[in-house]
Length: 511
Image (cartoon, rainbow, N blue to C red; front, side, top):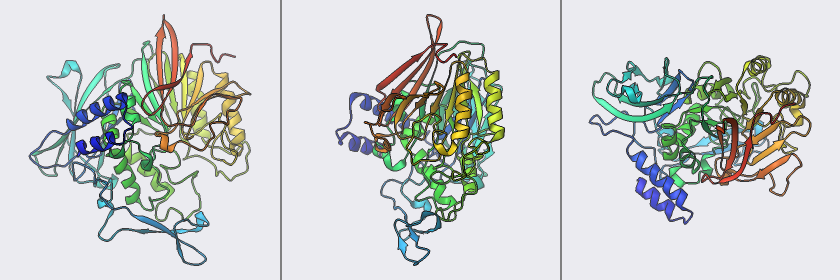
């Protein structure tokens, strides 16, 4: 099957030498993931995810599947029509979105488990074996644990007491319920963070806008993943819009199917078993476009905002809170913030009480930033704070709808020495400097060229230092050049080619 994908992709004529090298590495590594077993499962078709890595801790997310591979593109797809509340007629595009009632139609005999890209879950037990290079002969292992059928047959292993700045190898093992026979196995790895006192080179990637229908390597997935993996990043940050629920996720089973089909793609599965990630959610992977708690709509059918919140915690490795901060050595600290759970309605009149972050998160953020002695401090936000953004939008701090809190946060961030913002959500890459405060913001851009848009390449504003309506990712490197701490930010295209580079040294934002 993988050979067929390769031939199909090469036949498009879009394959350069960089893509070809990445593709060959991907196929070779993916083909070695699963250890042949006598039991026939359970399997790991949606791979593993390694997350929340610190200098002593990590979480490994596992999900068991009934089949070793996803349903191919021969699988059926559902159709969603909307009942007009006035006429009762079924329409493909509702005239009034928030009062229309969706009707999901499956092809005859089809279920969620048989849809294109599906990877149905299954009961079973999982165990994690892990070791450093010095411990290969005597690895540590967790007790066997049963996956939770109420959480999509997932389990999350929390590993504590790890050694800082150390490479850990891991092996996930599976077995059927009430069986001692081995099932499938999957290898992976991650490196823990250096201590806060240790100068260290750190490389990480940032992306957003992973629209399944806009994947650019056909059934293999997305080009950005092998391109990022070639940089050997220490970690990856997904700023949100990981899946897009809006059009087809009208129930919990259909919402889970969105995660199955994205993380059973070979590019995603291979990347996440070798690169730890931090996940942030945004509107499309919480509920629907520009959503907030308590939004009144029938557009999403049986699926609710609260269910979307719960599913996010089910589908990614995550600790106690969805807003958190991580230290990576002496020169880097990152903050990941929550932009959906605490926000006021977008339609509420602006004022000092209107918020995206909420009081508790905002106080936590200011307190932890003030306490940090990292050389470079980076806020990674699911949505922009500087922009500019489109005038018709009203969902982020760069919009007039949240002008009061936006000004408050930009003023605070600009007062902090050597602090920048990296944002997702926007479908174009940019570097902007706020004309009032001097705050720098880097938009990573969407995961594919097919998903790029929403801004004109010709509309370069005075605050834009770089503008490119393309897909790709942001590659960030913290290093020391002649013992000088240096922050390098590179906007890359989907194949990893550098399109723009900024090199920052301490004092760049000092007031």
